[in-house]
Image (cartoon, rainbow, N blue to C red; front, top):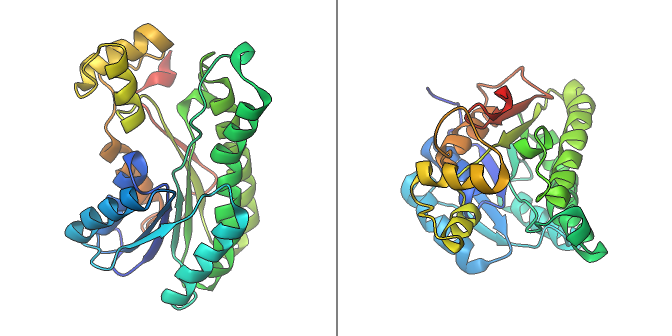
Length: 265
C-alpha cells in the first residue's frame, strides 16, 4: 500500500532506537524525509545510517532532551529552517525509564517519569504545531502503553505518565479537528524493545526469542497476550506509520492497541 509519504517531512522523537526507530524506518521505506530527535548523538547517527539505506537519503539527527523545553523549541526551529517552515508528521515515541511499585518510588522518580513520559510530548507538540499548521497536511501520533488499560503494580509511575499522554492526545484531537490534523495514540503491549530484551537477559531469559520473552513477561508481570509471543518493534512501527500517513485521513482521537490481544482477558 502506498501511504502517500513520498517527500513528507517527519520528526520522530525518540526515533533513535526501538519502536521509535521502527516507526521512522517505516516512514523512510515509503520515501519520507525523516528527522530523529533524541539525547544520544551516537545512537541517532546509527539510526540515520539505517534510515538512509531504507529510503530517506537526507535523514537528520537532532540532539535534544525532550525534558528541556527551550532546547526542544530550538530543535524544531532548526528543522523548520531546513524544511521550509513546514512539517507533515510528528511522532512522539519516548517513554520514561522509571519502574517500580508505588511504595518504592521517590518524588524525584515520579517527576522524572512525568517529565520523560508526558511533558516531553507536550514540549514537542508545542514546538511543532506552527510547522504542522503551515503544511498542506499534517498528522500527530503519540506512543502510550497498553498498561494504561491493564495495570501492572511494577509500572505505576510509567503508566501514570502514559495515561497523561492518552488524555492530552484526546484533547489535542478535539483542538486540531477543525484544522484537519488527526491526532492518534498507539498503545504497544509486550513488545521486544531494547529495554525489555535487556531485562529478559538480566533474569536469564533469551530475550531475542519472542516466545520465551512472552513466557518471562507473563511470569514476572502477569501481562499475557492471546498470541503466544511478544510483539516486534516493526509491527508497532507499521501501525504508527499508517496513522501518520495521508491514508489516515479521518481517524482521530483513537487509541490503537498493538498488543497481541492482551485486552481480551
